[in-house]
Amino acid sequence: MAQKLTKKSKVAVKPVKTTPVKKGVLVMPKEYFSAVGRRKTAIARVRIWPGKQELVINGKPLSVYFKGETIKKMIFSPFVVADVSGQYTGSIKVSGSGIMGQAEAIMHGIGRALMKADPEKFKKLMRDGGFLTRDPRMKETRKSGQGGRARAKKQSPKR
Image (cartoon, rainbow, N blue to C red; front, top):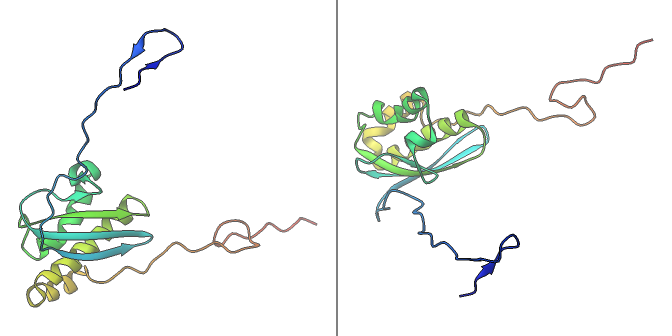
């Protein structure tokens, strides 16, 4: 193994051995229920299965990824409505938008995945709770030749 010399001192620097960090905390089972949730520009790929561990989002536990209690309650609301809180765990990959958009996308994805788990039991509950309907509201796009933002107009010159 080659040893590297620094410019300041002529003492050899030994490389530090690091142990690889495990990305996820959960072990993925062979059977799971997957769904995709969306909100604004956020996309959440949700996989749930029966279990008692904490949800893992982008390789981090839910309590680390989302700090606020209100967001956690909102994410768990499909489980509460279906009366299966604490019975399912899962892994979620989410990207795009902000914290609130990502949380609502996760909620949408969990509702769809629960419906796939047991359609005759959960479909009506998820539909009545509004967890299966994608919220179509998006940010309005800017218009070319205008003032820069979506509805801004250029100021006319004073005469």
